[in-house]
Image 1 (tube, rainbow, N blue to C red):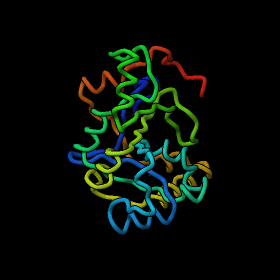
Image 2: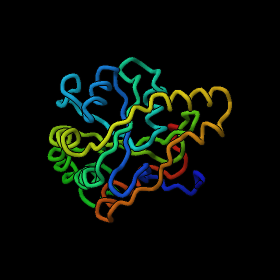
Image 3: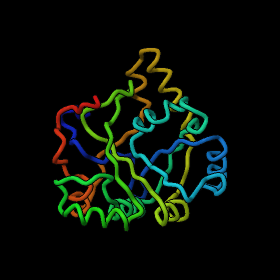
Image 4: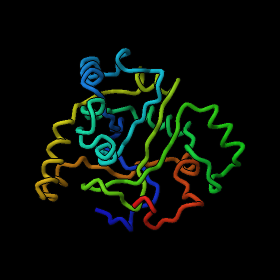
Length: 216
């Protein structure tokens, strides 16, 4: 296992195989049960007109949903397997949520891209088992419009309810058995990204340090 110092500041880490990549979302019982029955999200209750965020980092999802205990709208943790073709398409068509001078194009072009794309990339501090921030980032991918349609109708190849796994890990963390909790975590490895896409979404930001951020 790499140390925090050895992990790139921006890197996509995910559980993936030859054909699919696992991402996570948290939903209400109503949305989760319908999705599990159908093998994809069902509208209604899922709202295609809203932006939906997919997260390859299990621990960032746990931070966002409070291990499934935060609120009724995030009580069910779903592991969604999407095709690598779809995931790669999303990365290739994405734009960062904020402009940075390190990008290989101007702020004007970034604004044009923001208006024309349905996919937004945001980088937030990765989390440890205590859900404390780490000095490197985890990716969130926001989908809207055509990207949501592709996600729901084309990319999803399987959905698994992992709420009980989340609760088991949370229980072990609370009891102080971090080693056992660590063993239950899904394995996530650096995900390969082509150089052109990497230059747009993995670029080291000009206005941030690689040292631990003020966020923690």
